[in-house]
Image 1 (cartoon, rainbow, N blue to C red):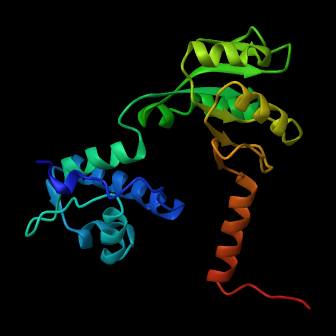
Image 2: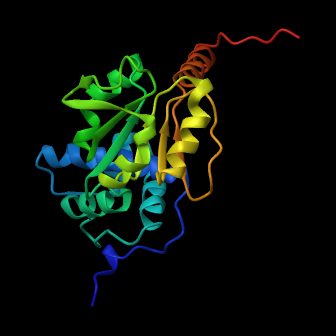
Length: 224
């Protein structure tokens, strides 16, 4: 009989906010583990992240029952479970499209590999970049997208192209079989429901930070 603590609660997708907190829980659990801690309660886990313990329990219960009465959560077991839930218990090959300043910075970012994401193919439309080598990989033409994606079994793509090119490239990615796009282009993309998108607009995040900063210090004012 399977241990119910390891059994997911269903196949319905979790809300984005829950998934975001699960990533935070995983990082905090890994920090606890590095300190030699073996078990943790929901209140201890929540306190480390400024999240109340009821929310921690509710988030984890969305995926199953992982705690033990009188013990709390066994950290090694919960880390394994959350890695499986997030899909990072295996390696994900990535295609990176766009080798401008941002694309080259993303290529050098080691955090991707540390979480199981490995950039294995580079693409650009600039003829001066096609054929060049970056980080041991050759930049390919977008005309080869479909071929390379099938050959290297790529499901996810990182898109770092100018806004005016983003939708066209996204259409090419979808036609080539990509199922998920990490979009750094500062515009929304229209894709089929079968394709997932996570958008990262750095200017929007800075605007959010500016708003929070001025409201925290009481400096906001409205002119009518």
